[in-house]
Amino acid sequence: MATQSRGSRSARRRNRRYIGLVILVVALAGGWSWFWHYAAGRAETAIAGWRAREAKSGRVYSCGSQTIGGYPFRLEVTCDKAAALFRSNQPPVELKIGEMLIAAQIYDPTLLITEFHGPLIVAEPGRPPFLEANWTLGQSSVRGTPAAPERVSLVFDDPKVDRVGNGNRITVLDAKRIEVHGRLLEGTVTNHPVIQIVTRLRQAAAPTVHPAAARSLDADITAVLRGLNDFSPKPWAERFREIQAADGRIDITNARVQQGDTIAVGSGSLGLNVRGRLEGQLRVTVAGLEPFLASINAQERVQNSPDMDKVAGALDRLLPGLGGMARQQATNSNFSLGIMMLGQPAVLEGKQAVILPLRFDDGTVFLGPIRIGDMPALF
Image (cartoon, rainbow, N blue to C red; front, side, top):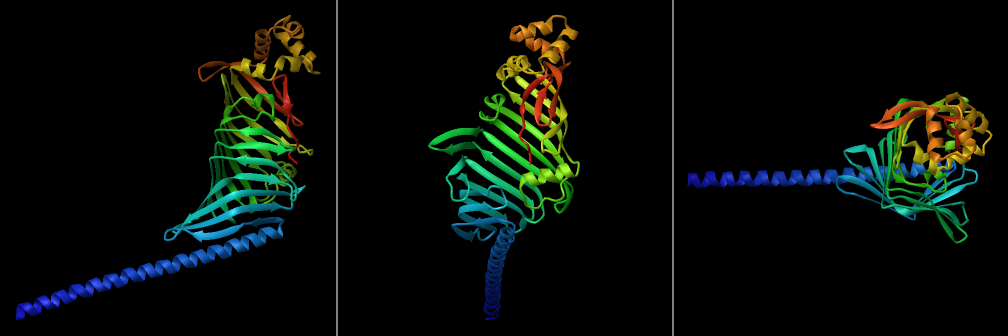
């Protein structure tokens, strides 16, 4: 009888432990569910408040429908038929996109991941679109908070941008991959921030921008923006105006561009004049210069430009008669040789190269003596 009584007590203790464990699990699950719904409610309130603040500044964001999910460990905000209207732009511009999914882990709310599902339509309000973009993967990440971001990244796979209108469609950008990464180097987003921007392009072509960009290229460019007052939402033209007023600059700390057999690396510093145009110079080392010169029809550009006398004189000083050869439509190989002799010989990635200045003069771009083109005013 005693043995049976002890066994009964042990069984009751085990049952109580099981019941206690079940109650604890249910309490934790209930508490977590309450916390998740509380966080979801806070997120919805924060989004509504952010939209209201942005609307006061002329930036109106909307969703055709909005849902919050991701239980139990994530918060996911799905915005279907998302739209953004920027009234502060002149003229105003409206962006429409198929869907946006914004996600954050409950345990790490300072990292926001956003997925974009195209197409993206850009138009003036009430008018037909003038740009249309699509991609296979579009994603952004923000480390920090929406009010004080520390790092921001944008990644698009297979992006394609077309100019549309009047029944026509012209491709202005086509790439395998585009990445843009920004981070805060100094200051804060509200007090003279210094921003580093890293841009990576893979198999990117922009045939309507410049003849040199018609063939696909790879690029890795790191730049630092100095002279900003803050990084509050505003048009980029206004930011560049701030940089000019503060005598700020755009430091290209490292750049590498490859297009076919042509490779160029360089660095330097650029500023902005009162007309919003770039001024400054980069020191560029170029290997495989000849294909690049041919792609932009450099010989004709020099011969038909006011700089021809200056270029021919410089060539003649280096090698008598070389300037006359350029004047008389010498062969491209001799022309390329003359241009290379104006620079400093170098070796780049095991290839014969030349160091030339890439000069920006009131927005006009020169590679050595060759006028490459004109950059539009930034404000």
